[in-house]
Image 1 (cartoon, one colour):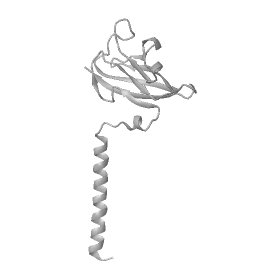
Image 2: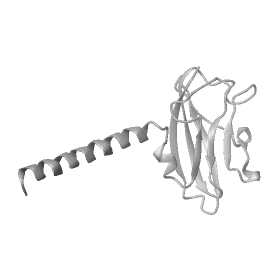
Image 3: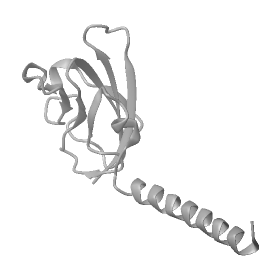
Length: 142
């Protein structure tokens, strides 16, 4: 290979590496959460990771058909609060698979404390409840 041809090949490889790097960083900015998009059991986290929400907003998970879920909230003041089943708004009967909690009077949380809070959702296939998994995400409360 002549010197000029080697330089052209090296330049093409370098440009390919730069293009790959740009595609990777631009893809990361679109808000796609790979732990959700690559998991067939999870349709969405509510709210998204690092979102900013109000103290009375809903939190939870949207699961695929055939899955059941439970929620625990880690508050910014250091408490881990399992959400009782009767306080989870579930659209399970409508086959929507949403398991949501909205704080309010008479519930385990009147309001989400300000600053960073997290949710841990445990989910499992209805046909095989022993096969449970968890996902955890955090968000800001104002």
